[in-house]
Length: 270
Image (cartoon, rainbow, N blue to C red; front, top):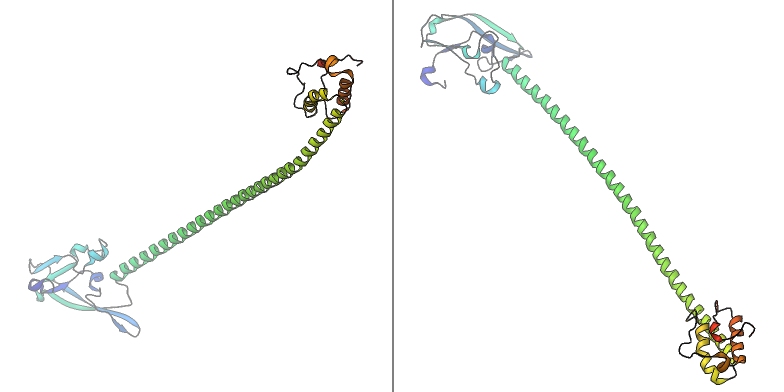
């Protein structure tokens, strides 16, 4: 034995649950059944130690199954008998069992069952975790799709704004291109008007004085033409003929919106 010479002796147990364990009773197969054989004995118990000792289990039960009881009638700490007095034990009956489940097998089944239950719980948790992860992934994908749709809308709006800007630039260039010839045509018409008015003045000396004034009026360089530099007295210097011609031309011109002739010194009839 593992206890050396001091442990050489006879081992018995008051519990059939302990005695039928595989370590003490090797099972055999017979006609498809599992058979175990145990000797039932009578033992003299009034022997003093150390010839007779009541001891606990010696099969490593505590390590494998903890405090679980081997027998309902005897504690694990007093389930084994050890004696060095062989004459104190008398076998008197042979006990045979068939296809039983030993306490060791029962506890192993419980452990396996617990393991299976725990494995099922773990598998369920793993499945739930996968489902939750899949849902989170689905939600994230939906958010990505929504965000992409927003980006697409923003891009479309940006593209539309770009097109509108380009169209506005095109229209501005077109308007500028059209405005140039129109302005040139208007300038040419104004120049013709100035020439026509000036042609009505026969006195060249008067014409040299009136021409810048007429040009200023026709080209709208001033709403009211000031004569501070010349201070012309139309009655004496311009002559009635020239003043009347200028007034008639300005009155008949559609290009002039307002003409101030108060400074000409002309009467309403003139």
